[in-house]
Structures are given as C-alpha cells and as structure tokens.
Length: 415
Image 1 (spheres, one colour):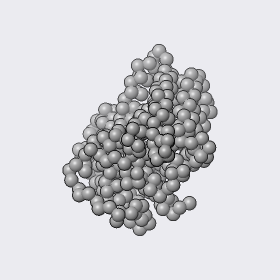
Image 2: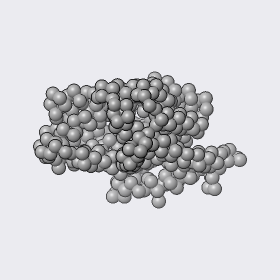
Image 3: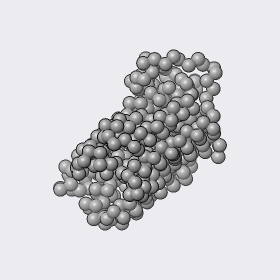
Image 4: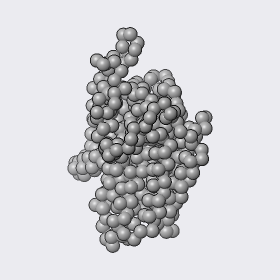
C-alpha cells in the first residue's frame, strides 16, 4: 500500500479515536459544570453545535486546501484542535466547554481535506476502494474511542480530553514529518486570503452550478439523513422493543461497527470494479432498504444481529458516491468538492436525529417499528436522483466530456 495513503489513513483513525473519546463523558461533564442533574437539552445543544460548525466550515477548509495546499490546512487545524482539547480539559466553565466544542467542530471539518488528499494521490478507478478504507479507519476509530473514553472517564472525568489532545499532537507530528504535500502548487499562484475566503456559500453555489454533481449531492443528503436513523434510535429501539441491557446494546454496536469496517475494506473495491459506481450506489440503497424493513418488522432481538451483514453491505454506497463525484471536477477543485459533501453530511447530522427522534416518539405507542419503515420509504427518492445522474453523465458524442449543455461544467469557478 502507498506510504502516503498509510499515513493519511493513520491520521484519520487517530482523529476518529480522539473525537470518540469525548462522547461517553459529555453528559457527566455537563452535570459537573452546570450543577444540574438534567442536561438532556444541553447535551443536544452541544452535539448540534459541533455538527453545525462542521457544516459551516467544511467547505471553507476544503476550498482553502485547494488554494494553499492540503498540508498547511491539516497542520493548522490539527494544531488548533490540540490546544482546544487541552483548554477544555482544565477549564471549570461551561461557557469555555461550549466554545471549545464549537472549535472542535471547526477543526474536525478537516476530514474534507483528508478526503481530498486521498483523491489527489489516487487514480479515479481506485478512489471508491480507498474511500472505503478511509470509512473503515474512521469507523474503527469511532468504536475504539468511546470504549477508551468510557474507561478513562471513570478514572478521571477530564482524562479523555487530555488523551484527545495527545492524539492530536501525534497527528500533528505525523503530518509534519511524514506527510508531504499532495499537489503541485507551483503551477498556480494562490489567491489572496480575504473575508470571502471564509464564506461557505461560495463553494456551495459552485457545487450546485456543476450540473452532474447536483443529483450526487442529493444522494449524499438522503443517505446521510437515512443513516442517522440507526445512530439516533438504535439504543432506544433495542431497549424498548427487545428489552436489551447495556451489555447487549454495546455488543450490538460493536458487531455493526466491525461488520461495517470489514465491508468497507473488503467489498467496496471489488463491487465498484465489477458494477461501477452508480450501480454500487443502487446496491447499497437496496440492501439498506431490506435491512430497515426487516428490523422494523422484527419480533426478536437476535434478528438485529443477523442482519448486521445487510447493513454492512449497504455501506458500499457512500464511498461510491464520493468516488463518482470526484470525476466531475478538476484536480484543483477536489478540496472544495469534499468540503461541500462533508458539509451536506454534517447538515444531515443536525436534521436527521431531530426527524428520527420525532418520528420514533410519535409512532412508538402505535407501531414502534414505524421509524424504520419510514426510513426505507425515503429511499424511493433515490430513484429520480439515480435516473437524473444516469442521463446527465452520458458521454458526449465526440467523447470530449459529459453530455451537458456547456460540455464538462466541472471547471466552473465559484461566482
């Protein structure tokens, strides 16, 4: 495997562990800082703020990495995260924690830059497979992080913040010493840094101006929205429907995490190579739909474990969408593209849990599995998006690019 790929995947895994460390201890830390025993609303605000900052700044960091290079943006964001976690570790003020989580969300938007880095160093035919590797590394890190964070939190409530700072410091060293710049910046003069550079609307307007990208952005939104249903109601559903205890809940999450990671590593590459990205997206949506219907109708808890492979196979879809999108833009726009896609995903992380919990609470008394059937039904909206992409992306008769009114619109710049 390419050395640069190994380094960037290691950085992503460490980043995910650092992010996951914090979540198990946040409720208790909020109780300590506020002196309140009921922090549900505050917890929701803190989690939503983190996702909101990702939504706003992913396009900004992605676009800046196109202008100034992936490496400088990674160094500055990871360095900022290191200091931020240390401040949160020792501050006795809730306001500082709130600001700190906002900054953590901003710096975590560098995942768009890491994704663009992988696109830079990878041939188009291999991108789906490598995006699958990336997803697997992040998934494993997000399994390990909460486990370590929970143990550390029982020893010292602020311990996970200190360890997260240490992991970010290790990432900073990895980027500085082992990760060269992925792009040749000598051929183009970087644009000056202005206030407009920090406006996320510019990259978003640009992306919606690239006609072939529009249905793909819609797919990213739908998949992210539906994907937040398991993340939001899984624990509630398992406890309410199957009477799971804490151990069974943890075992189910670990099972899904391991199956998902295995799918990303072993299946994404072969499936996309055999069927192509667009058909792989359809396959992922089909498996997810079947899994949602089964879990919604299930009457025994073992069914949830039995269909873990279905949910895992469904995971081949998102890397295929990312890979297909990278074909629509030039090399000097990959960061901007990944920033927009990350921003859309972050938006679903804000909206998805709100919708999921609302549907679950509204239908729990009458039919507890209705939320899963609703999720499966939303997948029908993928059909017009797939058909639109299929029509738009046909090769032009002269073979010069995409069959759009203006040829390949991927080279448009933000207005």
